[in-house]
Amino acid sequence: MIIDFHTHMFPHILAERTLLKLSAFAGMDPHTDGTYEGLLSSQRKAGIDCSIVLPIATKPSQFRTVNDFASRYLSGEVISFGSVHPASPDYKLELRELKSRGFKGIKLHPDYQDMYFNDIRCKRVVACAAELDLIVTVHAGLDPKCPEDIHCTPKMAAEVLDEVRPGKLVLAHLGGNARWDDVERYLVGRDVYFDTGVVFDYMDAERFIRIMRAHGSDKILFATDSPWAEQKRFVDVMDALPLVEKERERIMGENALGLLGL
Image (cartoon, rainbow, N blue to C red):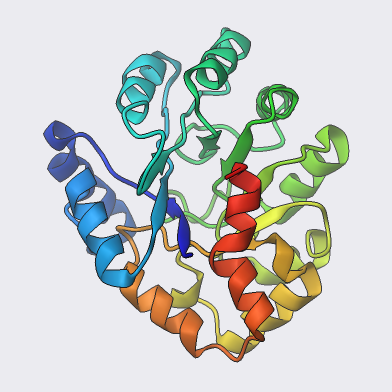
């Protein structure tokens, strides 16, 4: 089974406009039209069985609209997480609501939520989510939106791990996009998951394998960050890597199944 643990989609009314805006930030062309149907078509062409969608509440007032849309996709070929904004005064109630509605986890994006990951408000959200047995996926490392001001560095993530000790934290982009030296210095070997979102566009195979084996193949999740990477190409890249079969099975699906409790 292949699970892509990091994808994005948007309501039809917003998809085109959202992709145009994000493409301008990223300087990248999307590989789907940003809709549910576009994601489903992409993953089926890639032989992916399930995509995890990671929405982002960029301000506290978006909690209802973001999560009402996401709640349509809680099982099947596409499973959506929810999102809360760490500045929300009602974050505990919001997290409890997401849990009661059947969400498996939440996505935080400190760059788009305008908050550093070691801010006490992020730590409180991560701690509360952990109490509720919710997965927390956070964007880690460089983001094209603000490349000179990284809001979740590997060192910040290590601080959260030290203070909060969450059981189900996923650091996207292999722990810190384009900050691989600090990932190896501060995070490799810690009790935290890394996903592979977009990393094969920026990292050579030798370094990926070194980090993966030092960290443990049981804590790596296959991910693309679709539509910002092509799902089929990332599956092909993984197929071409010189991995032992158990490493491949864990990364491509077994780890995700265990984390999701499926």
